[in-house]
Amino acid sequence: MTSIGTGYDLANSIFSPDGRNFQVEYAVKAVENGGTSIGIRCKDGVVLAVEKIVTSKLLKQSANKRIATVDRHLGVAFSGMIPDGRHFIDRARDEARAWRDTFKTPISTADLASRMGGYMQAYTLYQSVRPFGITAIVGGFDSTEAAPVDGEVGSGPSCGAGGKVLGKTHGGPFLYMIEPSGLYWGYYGAATGKGRQSAKAELEKLDLGGPAGPALTLEEAVKEAARIIYVAHDDSKDKEFELEMTWISGADGPTKGLHQEVPKALREEAERLAKKSLEDDEEEEPKEEKMEE
Amino acid sequence: MEFGNSGSLREDGIHLDMDRLKKGEVNLGTSIMAVTFKDGVILGADSRTTTGAYIANRVTDKLTQVHDTIWCCRSGSAADTQAVADIVKYQLELFAMRNGKPPTTQTAGAIFQEICYDNKDRLSAGLIIAGWDERHGGQVYSIPLGGSLHKQPYSIGGSGSTYIYGYCDANWREGMEEADAVDFVKGALKEAIKWDGSSGGVIRMVVLTAEGADRHLYLPDTDYKVRHV
View 1 (tube, chains in turn orange, green):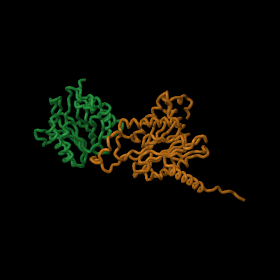
View 2 (cartoon, chains in turn blue, purple):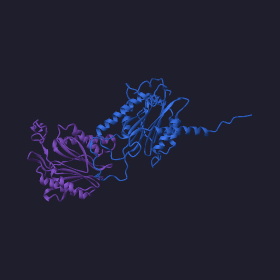
View 3 (cartoon, chains in turn cyan, orange):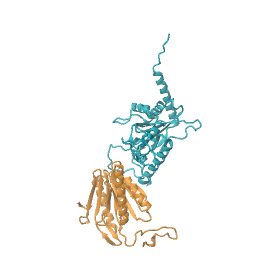
């Protein structure tokens, strides 16, 4: 970064001569210092997990959650500056509510990602603001049934809907990641924060893409997510951390279409397996041969 | 504002409001209906518009397009329902552009309901929304006077509908073929026109399927037997 210190990094809304916005790049640095967050889109749902670094023993365990529910079927995890993340979540809730007010139907994951991408982007444009110091992972499950209507009297007829396109499916699990620049993509698996490199390497090993869709099931994904957070955690940098995990399934799955915390028993089982897997890996590493006389 | 005193609350607490229109306001004393069938949905309406006893228009088009395959049947005040349909048409066009996909019938129903409910004291509009979309197929929503939203397999409305509740209940079947559904709508509207003094003129229909919208016109001259284009 040779152009640092030349004044082009002092404000948003000023490009450097080689076409960069340094304030946005610095915001990305803030994200890279935050605890790892990951999202996995699997066959029957989405799992979100974060490595919540414990900064003080005086903080209550499992309080101060880092993954938030934005609407019944939508969750957001983030890495980076926590107050920025809280504001992002507030705004996401407003957007989800506004959509329901206007269209009487839940916002789709894609539409929420689009709205929030636009919101983040707006904070890269003006002198009076700074970009968000977070990267957010948005997970959701859009109803595969006929989209429900808020404010409809009764549940409507079970018969009479003629001429549907047969064999065409709608809705399902979706995952998006939004960066400080406002850039967002849909992902099979997403990782951000401190341990993103090793987390991404682990995500790439999972069967998430392909034309037939992901093979991984929700329960497998919960266990993989826990393992990946443990792999991505760096003991030498931060000693203590808590694993926070949420999941979203379809109406016929364990969460009945809602974004919820992974039940304690399942999370603890996943953590046990994650720790065991790490120990096994350590054993496999060849021992240094000692020179003896 | 010249309303009759029929809208006021009586001593016994019973609220009667038979005469919602202003003096001289154009009324769609009407027979309208929408019916789902195997491949989609059919909207149907008579064509009489009245100001009191005078027929202001004998070939009115009460079937109004608000998006490619989302239409509505209008009853009540002609001015009110035209204004509401105009607003919804604009909203749906905006929706399609913003979201890069066509709105569903329920989105249209929700927007109609919002307007009808928020302005319930000022509007006299009885609407039936019918549309076809890829996800839900043909759907029918009705929004009666208070601004509630009802999803129905078929719906009838307007002053003429009172005469055909029995006919429709006896003759409607789920998953009809298009030709049978057209005959059902035509048969019902013929009865409504026969018995209701404020309904009459031609029978108009719109058939909504995966193929798009198709208009039908039937004239009394040929006893509604021949389809004119």
